[in-house]
Length: 258
Ligand SMILES: [Zn+2]
Image (cartoon, rainbow, N blue to C red; front, side, top):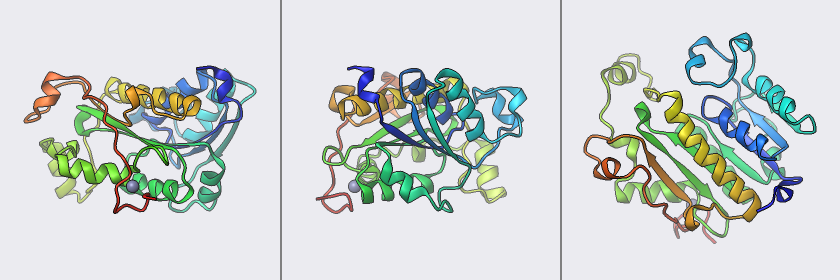
C-alpha cells in the first residue's frame, strides 16, 4: 500500500462533528488532500468534551474550522466546504458524482439512508459509521459497488440477525424523558470522546484501505461491530471487543442489486 495511490482521490464527507472530525484528521495526516465537507453546524461549548477543536473556535462553522485544520497540516490540500443540510443542498448530487469515496459521519438514520440512496444511484463506495447509544461501541459499514451490499442491505440483514444493536440497548431515564417527554425521537444519549474516537479510527482505516486497494480490509469483511463494554443481554459484547467482520453481499430485493 502506497500513499501515491491517494493522488487525485476526492473524499466527500458528510458530518465533521465529534465523530467526523477525527476521521478527517487522520486521513489528512495519511495523505488524503482532496476534500468536500458537508456540515451545517457551528461548534458549541457542549462539544468541547468530545470534539477535537478549540474553545477559540466556538460559534464558528465546523466545516470552516476543519478546512483550516486540513490546510495547516497540508497547505497543498484542496478543500470545498458546504455548510448545508444534505437534504437541502443543491450540489450534493454533483459532489457525489465527482467524488471517489463517501464518508457518512452523520448522526441520524435519515441522513444515512438518504446518502446511501445517492451512493447506490451513482455507484460510489460509501463508508458509514455510527456510535451506539450511550457509547457502548459502534459499527462501520462499507458499501463497495460490485463487492458488497449497500447500507440498506446491511439494515435488512441486521434485522434478521437481531444485530440492530441500538434497538437492544435498554433506554436510560434521560433517553426516555427526552424521547417521550420532549418528543425528540432521534435523541440518543451520547458516548464519551474515547468511545466515539475508537469508531472513528476504524472508519478511517477502512477508508484508507478502500482508497488504496478498493477493498475495506478487515479480512475482506465490510461490516465491523465494535463493543467497548458489555451491553446488558448481549452475550457477544461481553466476550469480544470486536465481532468478527462480516461480508454482506448485495441482496436480491435491494435497489443496489444487479
Ligand atoms: Zn442494497
